[in-house]
Length: 99
Image (cartoon, rainbow, N blue to C red):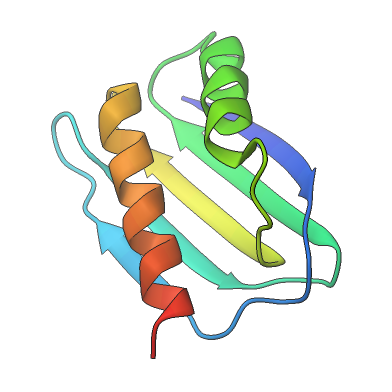
């Protein structure tokens, strides 16, 4: 098990909380909650040691050119593929931005 942390610039705090996905074989759980103004903070707990570069690249592609809400994101990964990670994060952002 490995715990990774990431920080990105963000706008105003996001509204609401959401939980998407589940921790099971090949999936992951994403918890999103309001954060501090100007900061998007991510903590990843992963079963795949040595995967920091993969997570960094995934977040850079996902967040590049986007205005993001200031939120805290906790990810509990059970070996999910980058496609599943992106899907769950997009689901989470959609849930907190739509009433």
